[in-house]
Length: 363
Ligand SMILES: Cc1cc2nc3c(=O)[nH]c(=O)nc-3n(C[C@H](O)[C@H](O)[C@H](O)COP(=O)(O)O)c2cc1C
Image (cartoon, rainbow, N blue to C red; front, top):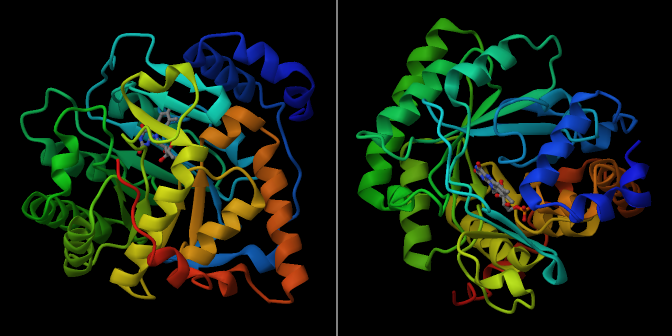
């Protein structure tokens, strides 16, 4: 079934507005007909932050904002999937059009603005699942919230019984002021309150849910210092690097001047440099998830070699279709075999220094 995309699906989908095409993809996944059979490979399994991942490739947040198709995504070969960003109350997001393909650049600009159906709708769907694949819940704050930190705390409490992990997303460029939560004082308060809520919930439930922080790629070295220090101090479980960028450097497509966050191939280098620099700051034990411009097993391995334990993608699937995750996972198995290592984790950090010494490109 994923082969249909390669045959004629991409041309048909690309004839539509990007958001309409996304709606069709969700509808296609809901049919349950899209399966990519891959055998579980013990060489790709890892325990990260207390969670046993069948392989290191995950679906990034934003594709399944309302938790409509998590199991269908897992059936494509992903080892885990992240739903959201979900805010407490439903909200419409920004006016359309608000998602733009930059085809010549293999990229997308979006300014969706956390359009989503809210906590209640997503929880209903997640509570009805009968399968056990790994689902992370990415939580955010409503645009008009008076206490944004309280929105994150509410997310932790609300989804604690169904999330296998949480992502605290403070790095969307499309909710005005949200990225200010990345500054040291704001981050301290946010993380303290979120961790406190998680620990209280964990007392009622046998499994502790790890919490990851998702950061922007548009940070300078001093900001990375602050985030690393605070994440370590609050004993957070990991960091997801990164969200979309505001940079427009080196783009060809006519849509390059649309406002919003840029994802896909042009984000790869920047997000990988920030990942490697973060690995140097947080040390070997902190789980890191690399995201940004991944579109092959080679780019997945590059993220792992730069310092990632796990990797996510989104835009790569827009361009290459639903067969991509299985193709990547098979490629990872082959790479492990070829290198004669016993587990994918042995690749981690092998190119960390090379990536970490590079400058973060100017915005
Ligand atoms: C259309 C679109 C919507 C997104 N929505 C979210 C979101 O709601 N929450 C979030 O944390 N990241 C969101 N992202 C960011 C992705 O999760 C990811 O961090 C980013 O796109 C970089 O990965 P990629 O280059 O593989 O797409 C979105 C990305 C796109 C393209």
